[in-house]
Image: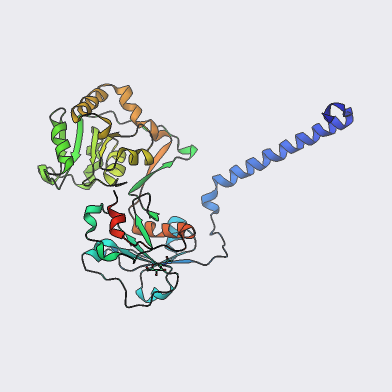
Amino acid sequence: MGCHNTKKSVLSSMKRCLVICLLCVLSLCLLNGWQTRFQPLRATKPLSSSRDVTILLWYWPFGRSFSLKGDVCWDLYRIPHCRLLDQRSLFPSADVVVFHNRELVQGMQKLPFDLPRPQGQRWAWMSLEAPVYNGNLGKYANIFNMTITYRRDADITIPYGEIQAKASEEHLVEDIPLNKNLLACWVVSNYRSQHKRSQVYKELSAVVPVEVYGRWTKKPLPSRALLSTISGCYFYLAFENSLGKDYITEKLWRNAFQGGAVPVVMGAPLGDYKAVLPPNSFIHIDEFASIKDLGEYLQQLAEDKKRYSEYFTWKQQWKVKLYTDWRERLCKICSQYNSLPQQKVYSDLEAWVNNT
Ligand SMILES: *[C@@H]1O[C@H](CO)[C@@H](O)[C@H](O)[C@H]1NC(C)=O
């Protein structure tokens, strides 16, 4: 209200002030943009008063080890203050000791019950398998403090892949692969007629042609030919071998998405896929009243280039990140270490794992 009564001179000096302020804000913005753009070059390890987090991998999954020379988490993934070790002698100094499930349940490895467990040290159970392939976990009650799996409700979630926003300069419109000659493709090595996916395949192939590759049909696909073959298919059947909460594997992330086919998915519930994927990026079998309906939908979509290409629109804004390196998964523990609950014990790991 007072503004209306101010004298002209005050008003003009206020205007000048406003202009200067605007200039300041503008230059700050420019400076900021400049910095963000050149972040990768300028990235220096942030100083932190907190000490390094020490992660000890008790043995390598599947017996295949990788180099831990240097500051692996920083050098490869820009995760600071994270010591990744595999020397058992360093057990007393580890904040987290990680045990991969496969070797434990198969009896090839044992938990170090003979060593005194340091105060505050967490033991982590790690697996990328679906529940049925995790074996009998009954004897692991009241031992582990954390879980590391693909499930969103694990303490550390290590999915097979994820969707990431593209930076604005990456917003290139990718070519939609439309030069296709096969309607639906499926790769299966371990065919079991009692699997639900085999049932779905049988019903679907009665409605539309399905090209099947892999050991079962004696049409193996060498890995170098996999993606180029899939790119010749309108649809890729990314059928998981087990049904389980959040169990979405490289069949979707790599085969379908990188191969440039629209994934037809089954395995985890529809809601799990919706939670991690952009709309219009996949087709879930549960979206149809019957497999026959699904087949008819696929047929129609392949004939309608415009509607078909809408299944690729998401790629303008999003990209797929695959996770394949155990070191990257282990480094992730450090990024989330400070948000872990102070005290936690899985009193019934088996129930947690089988809670699908
Ligand atoms: C980890 O689990 C053990 C065994 O049940 C328990 O004694 C310890 O307090 C737990 N530690 C943390 C940090 O939760």
